[in-house]
Length: 403
Image 1 (cartoon, rainbow, N blue to C red):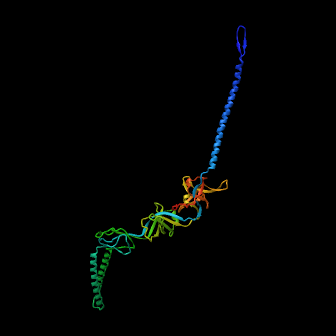
Image 2 (image 1 turned 120 degrees about the vertical axis):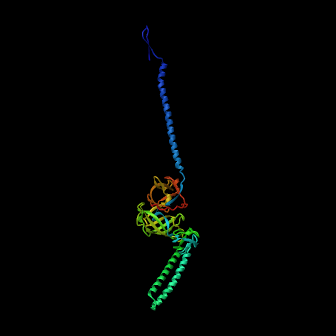
Image 3 (image 1 turned 90 degrees about the vertical axis):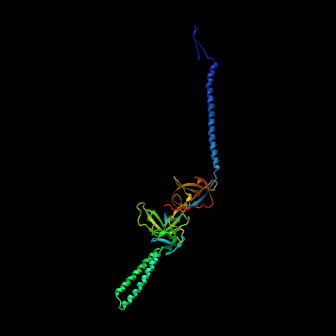
């Protein structure tokens, strides 16, 4: 850089000082040096952070690799191939084969009650006596008339045999005797109606009358039920009716006796299907020797059908039922690096079928001999290490078949 100065003496060029020129030359070098230093420091900082993160990830992975969670203790069951009973479930009610409300055929005042409520009676046992004194008097009158008519008839026949009496006398006395005999029969029938008897063997219910009460014809005296044999009435759908036939075994259970089953056989199948419900009525006969079943009880009915081919089953507790599908935890053996064998589980989706007596039918997803977790699935996930408990499985509640 030069400075030009004008004057009388002419143009004259003045040179810049040397120190200023050196400052201008050293400034870019210093800036470049600072940039290099800052860049190196930034590179060291970034490299340190990256290295630290990599080191931390490596240490975390090594920590988890060397500190595996303890094995979960579970109970295991084995998938089996077995023939399950082919059952058809239905609901119904029990009804007595013989049950009636005992009534009187005629009206009258009760003079005597001859039974005890709740007692067992046989056919013909007197139960209630109605006032029958007038009828007893009429019976005595007709018997006397019959005696006189019988004697007159005998004499008329003897005279007619000797040909000293008219035949018309014989006919007249015969008619009188027959009339008296008819009166006796009618009166005895009325008297028998005034004595109410048990129409069959059975157990009496609660007494509905009292001594001195005027009993009108048709009024209930007491109920009488034969408990030796009962009907189990139930309905099945039109589709299911094709699998039923007379003579098939039926097992009935009631709420009053949980766990107890009563066996019978189908005796009647309604020949027509109800148009309103498309159901068909079925009736089975069940022996009740202990008289513990009562008419009107709600009945859970199971019909035993012909056997089906073998199927794969597991304990029902081994299956997890979710909206995403049914699954089990399949137990697999895994060899570690040190040569030891460990057990792990893997969630396996399956297709289930019927459930019978605490066992679930597996239509797809398992093979016979596969072991699955039956208790403790809530603590499991795929790949988890497990140990099989030696404790017995808890009691599995019995479930009816789902058809």
